[in-house]
Image 1 (cartoon, rainbow, N blue to C red):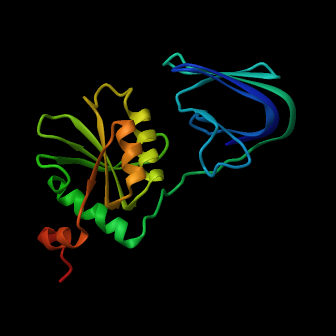
Image 2 (cartoon, one colour; image 1 turned 60 degrees about the vertical axis):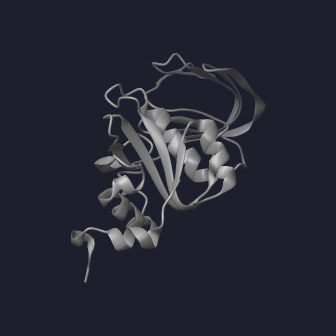
Length: 219
C-alpha cells in the first residue's frame, strides 16, 4: 500500500463530473490498484475513489487514474508532506461476532428463508474489496449478492452497494441484484437501500435456529 499526504486538487470525470478544491488530503493506493482520497474526517468513507482495475500514470506533480469503464481521476499535487510504501501481506478477513457469524451460517443452510426459491452458490464470495457474505441464485437462475448483519444500519447497505459496484462488470453474474439481511433494519437504512436498488429482508434468529438442519445441531 502506498500512502501519500499532500496538498492537492482532484478532478473526476465519469458518471458525473466532480472536483475537490485545493486542500490537505490522504491518498491511498492499494496493491490491487484501488485509489481512495480521504480528508481528516468523515469516518471511513473517502471523498472520492476508483475501484480496481485501474491504470495510474504518474507525471510527477499529476497522477491520472483511469479504468475500463472510462472513468478518469486526475490528482494534482501542490505540496507533498509524506510518501511511503507498506507491505501489509495477506489479510485473514473480517471476523464476525458470534451471533452474526451464526446467522450467516444458518442462512447459508436455509437461503429460502430470505426469499423463496433462493439456492446457495457460495459463502464468502470474494471481491477486490472483501468477501460478500452469500452469493445465491434465485428460481430464475439470476445471481443475488447478500450481506448479513445483526443490526441493519446505513453502513451495511453502503458496504453491499460497494460490493455490487465491483461485481456488476462480471458478465457471468447474470442480472445481479443485492439483498440486505438483518434481524432489525433501521428506517434510514431501508431508505438508502431503496435508493440503491437493494432489497431489505428481516429474519428471526430464533426461528432460524429452530429450523436449522441436523448437521448444524450440536446436541
